[in-house]
Image (cartoon, rainbow, N blue to C red):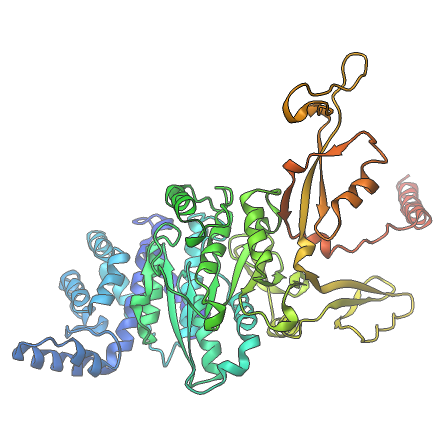
Length: 610
């Protein structure tokens, strides 16, 4: 049974729950039962040996835990002699037997089912007369890793969660990231370190502060193992949603990871990895979600610890906390002297430009750029995520830039790299192919500027599309057609995104038009500013303020001056503007000819009717 068929089969349990459960609550039953069946299948080959070992060690009065782990070959076990197939063989006692079965798991697994509040659901199903039917349905499927590998299992969980989030109208960006987006992020993360990661026995740490079901960590692990079977990635994460945390922890257990490194809780208010540093980090924090619930703790850390804490550079507006996660990840970077770090984070468009000079968002961007941490930003296609169609961007940051990247930022417009899906999944209508992931990764790895060349025929249909790097010849346009060029990869100095916000003052005049002069202190004898005529100008950091003022302001208002005490430095990244290509409108003759054709056709149709 393939992944899609398995997802549909598991989802069919919803038919049993309909009426007794609200649609939004289906996941409270289906997700823990899916996890239970997965663990049940994993433990099946060693169940008898573990139970026998447990009885032996219990009679000796010693802690059996290390012996049971050795017998199971895993970091968890179950000491009961029950499995799901035996459960459905005793319909009259299924509730008590199921509870007994859960209590037989090792502590880490029991914690998973506590996060699901599974005992409550078992009681509720039993009272509704549904417990046997649900258990029997899950006992039919085989979820052993030999039949359903970790990648497929992750897709199944994501498909289920997507359906549940649609039913409960979850906030956009709140849940998980499509696998192809994660794959692109992982490629960007590792491409410059291929030589190091290919060494035998290499061990690296990776961290996700909004881990969800662990999809990002899993894809990173799969990538590394595929390229170097002797490499090891130590996974670390934190997750706020109890169901997602439980799924992530179960997946880590099956993979043999140290589940103590996957922490439950709110990353922003209660850092579960305080003081720790990591080699790599990945994250898709909830974007467009306010952080009012943790505002008190975040502001306290900002004000009391400053740059010794996580949020020293500034605080974004309360309506969107995604930049808080960016600063949190920066605080987790290993010092450059110890090898440094690189991380990739998915953000919406707002962090690129929201907030003027001096605002929290601008100060965060200023810190990132002036400390030369930003390596690249990649624009993704719209309609990529399951519950939102907004524009999204991958930011890649590192404190160990190669020499050729120092002081510069690469912007890649990957919004045109997509294929239409045969069937939409919620708001997700597009996907990125492996070829497109490879192309974007090459552009990033080569650190080169490039253009996207589109060749269209005489009828305006696209004939071909290709990437043109510097020095490559432009393709020849077909007869009557044309070649369109659009920037695809651009490289800028860090300073190119900065500006000085200057305040331009003009003199206050009295009733007869005379300039009003100050009478006291520093203002004595100087022209007084008229607040009604006050204006501001943004001067690029790459340009002298006085030269700009002489050229752009004084020719229009000769009596103006700059109040230097009010000058602020700001940073913004106007991504869309930097990639905008002006297409001149059609000529009037062409438009008139088309209108004439339409009117002639309408006139002919009216004549036929009469």
